[in-house]
Length: 182
Image (tube, rainbow, N blue to C red; front, side, top):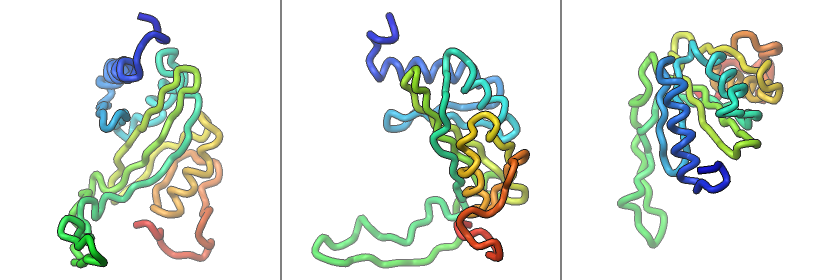
């Protein structure tokens, strides 16, 4: 079966199998949700995995479309009551809950969104970081456009990118203390 004769579902399954074969031995796991693939990798392997995703003929992810940070501290704890909300007006009640999500070892994540123009594939890559030392290797030398994305994740979440050429605030004032999305 040729690449052009495959359905989108078949192409997605083929990519999922290829990712599993290539990265399971490195501690990577692939999941599929709503027609999208996510490759979760150990933070120590980010540069190695990203280089292979960019350079391997089977993947050819030529572009990194986005890099973002996620704070899992209160993941799953919602103050919005929607199931019991009135359909005739404002029927929301808020109850503040304490932290319930990410533990110390998986508090933060860096999420990369990759695009293969030549193979028409998209992929989300996620690496979890701990609260005590939220640091991961920079990939600015692999995709030049991620420079600002990494700076944004640093500024808003306090995630550090080792090897970044100019890791400084990009959205908040230089005198701002803390990270507003924590």
